[in-house]
Image (cartoon, rainbow, N blue to C red; front, top):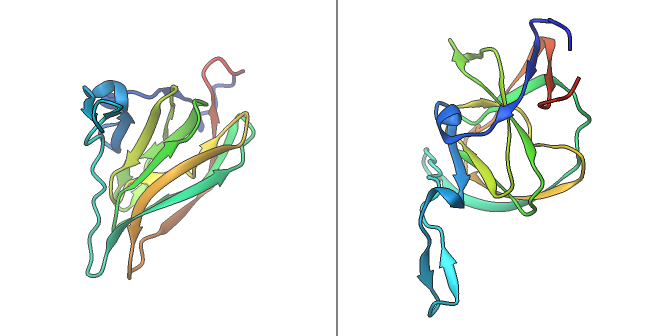
Amino acid sequence: MSADPRTLVARPLTAEAFAPFGTVIDAAAVAPRPMNGGMARRFHDLAAVEVVGEGSRVVIGLVEAQPYPMPLRLDLVERHPLGAQAFLPLSAAPFLVVVCPDADGRPGPPRAFVTVPGQGICYARNTWHGVLTPYGQPQDFVVVDRGGPGANLEEHTFAEPWTVHLPGQD
């Protein structure tokens, strides 16, 4: 891999590393509670989905996502100023998560993470992030985010794209 300053390697997704950008949704992080007469286990309160603005509400949707080729050419990030956004994979396949710290209203240098089976993510409100990025195979996700009036999408296109490699990828 080149020493290009606009190239980064994704790291394993951990709650600590992702904390500045949101919450890792991981059932392994909480003790389950029995429900339905002991026939089910509930992993409660894995992430809060904050929404703001008059008439706003939390909505649940389903996304069918096609895989991206790797290494990823990252030229677009987005953020949602009026609400958090959570993605819960419906399969055990990993996916790539890209986030950027805010730098005076613009995205700073990206950071990239790879999930493990059972992990989802909840981007905090107003966090710069890449698009939903499965790789290797198509993947379905439950998405939980904000519905209602107001502009809840801001996009930024990088003048020069970044290249994101998976761990061990040359």
